[in-house]
Image (cartoon, rainbow, N blue to C red; front, side, top):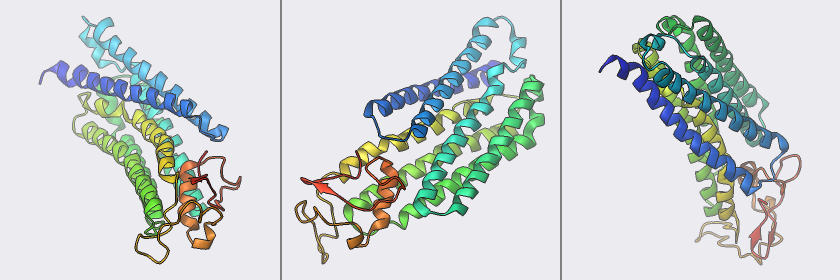
Length: 321
């Protein structure tokens, strides 16, 4: 493999893949606002902020590719200098990771009512954020690609703690959701979908973070690590928006008659007519409905976030607006 393949070639792959992921972010952003969820303003501002961040980072990555391949087409020495979007990549990544992890930590708190778990998530999310910012500032000061390996200890600490935060959030969500299963078909279908979403949230970002770390340590003189580093921020935004948009899909499972028990169980299927005035507490499944409430996060629930009643009107549940 030649010099340009190891440097500009791998970097361009990262830019191309990042641009593809940004296209998905644009689609998800439009779908979120088109669906008109009744989310609190802070959630809407969070989505808008991440979209602006991703737009700026993706545009800066394209500018970096242009600077290397067009502006400095006949100047190979330019490849030795880190363009400013290079140093901005850790900043965009840690900001997107922090916002996503804090939001998911909030979900964990609402599901578990454990302030301790939320405090652990906040600590795990803030630590890689600080380390990533330090890496970015030092990379900006160094500004020479061949000297970036001097940041290896910091990069190891940053990416290791970031993966640890992702794994803790994912594992905690999976445990909480798994414990919410009851055997009721409809609630279990929803919970299984949430578990898949939780796995996706941590898995893809962790794969790219670990790949970035390995290539940075083993191949520091190439830009191969940039191929994995540039798209990580988009992966966080994609998984977060997918989590928010999945509520519309889950609403389809919620609508209609509610499955109050196994087909052959003592309760069986409850029709819309017989279940019209049945509360969740009377069937002893408040946890499952609270999971659904945390998924929907809609105004159809009490302001304190505690689900109290499964209301059905003409065969329709009112779990989500």
